[in-house]
Length: 218
Ligand code: AP5
Ligand code: MG
View (spheres, rainbow, N blue to C red):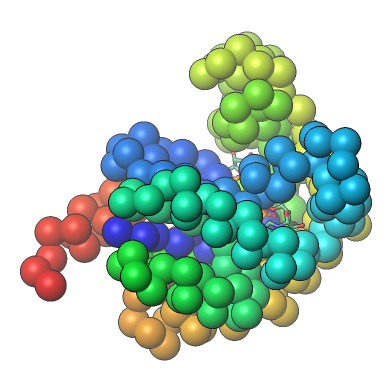
């Protein structure tokens, strides 16, 4: 089964994806995490990607398709949860092609939150430099300040958390990703969820949706 989590910056894609991976043991494809790993390499590609991410700009489809193809290759015969891909219509077409022989897209979950909520959450988010776990200083704090509960790694605020980059990321979502949501709604695979409920309530709702889908007769 292949599942996409889609939503604006700060909608909870990473938070929920990690819960689902734990529950269902799926492979986890987070384009943001994959790209941030690339930026740690001191290569021309790493530097190019870092510059774009810091400005909140999208990376080219060509680079994204290569990262996707490598991931699918390394995770054959596994169900995949996609976080951050596709986010433009051309990427939805790429994904259709790449998943054609391995089940296609079974479910797309749209985590819907307001722009104000997104901005509020991003201002107080911290993530683990080591394992990528996501926290929020207000709504989901770590047990010990600045230390990851899971691996003990240091927590930090992402480089694309400036007002300008957040503005650009949200603009990209409303202009380029909303058409992707409509694309999947049209195909009848979209489930829209209120992303402003508490984290645990949303996780329970997603687990219910996925469990139901998994037990449905084909
Ligand atoms: P990416 O890392 O995917 O960033 P994003 O889409 O902007 O989304 P975020 O990671 O900021 O938010 P999230 O939805 O994961 O929310 P989270 O769970 O952290 O991409 C980064 C960049 O990489 C892009 O801008 C682009 O440059 C590039 N890129 C990535 N994919 C690409 C692609 N396909 N093509 C081209 N370029 C690409 O939660 C946010 C905060 O809210 C946390 O603090 C969390 O604790 C809290 N929170 C979560 N849920 C709740 C809740 N229900 N109630 C209260 N607080 C909550
Ligand atoms: Mg994320």
